[in-house]
Image 1 (tube, rainbow, N blue to C red):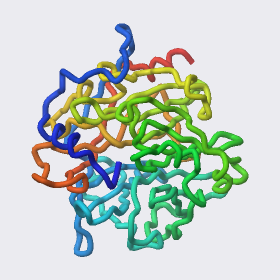
Image 2: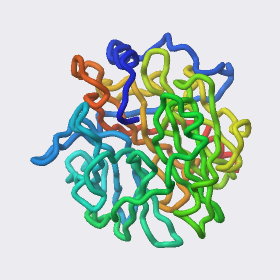
Image 3: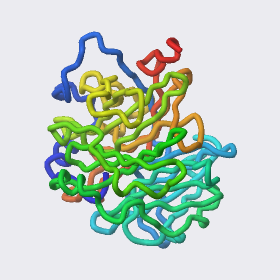
Length: 367
């Protein structure tokens, strides 16, 4: 989420402090025998790294891929409320190196200055190119053949000539944001959110990608309460199962962020074909009530993040036989600047690791 923040949500979240919230109303009715996730995390693994040309109070919206023996992380940075949004990149071989690894600000590349946020990175095999998708008021992308060279990204281009009509008709007072692309053997699917209860999907052929999305946009899934189905949608293939996992960020009644989840047989599933996996406040995919901190708790949010993938390709994929990990954004409510806006929230990046059996690992046993 970028460029906006509900004053009421911010004040409630700050008041929540660093506690596990027990009184959060359910996002949906939980089944008493529903499977559950549990996670462990430690201190933040990536924190702001300002330099002589860039103020930075937060790092957020991470996208991560492993290639050529290194982790490559792209993220949003902010110099503070009203001062814009930028993107940055760092790479490292081990998580112990992550925070100290050099940070490269991408406004110094052909991507350029101005509003750039919420990246997603993936390798598009047919063209032998890396794609970085991000929001700049539209759905933008840049490409490179060398992910390890942050200066090599191309200037922004756009998937759409303008906001598709179906989004204009349904966005209300929301924002068009958080673009996520996945492809199968024949089709590519570009998802986006609107902070108004909708997940949109556009389609094109693999042969035509990155063109062809303009005339195909539909509402992939929606809910009546915008805060139950808010933003940061992501779709992953679950290796060896024929299933796809949908994650969506919600805002609980306490103002804290959480992730809900569903599965379907295809990324172009209709709304009612997405089957709840862990989609309630009591039984979430990830939320303060299922996260254990190895050190002092530093966030009540589990907000805009990305699962670590098994491969770098054009189909973001997770392996149910390997422990799930998720790079996520959170912040310490005690560190919030009094009277500040959303852009002043001191977001850091943390790493969740799934503990023990869970609904995804159960799929390993079934295959």
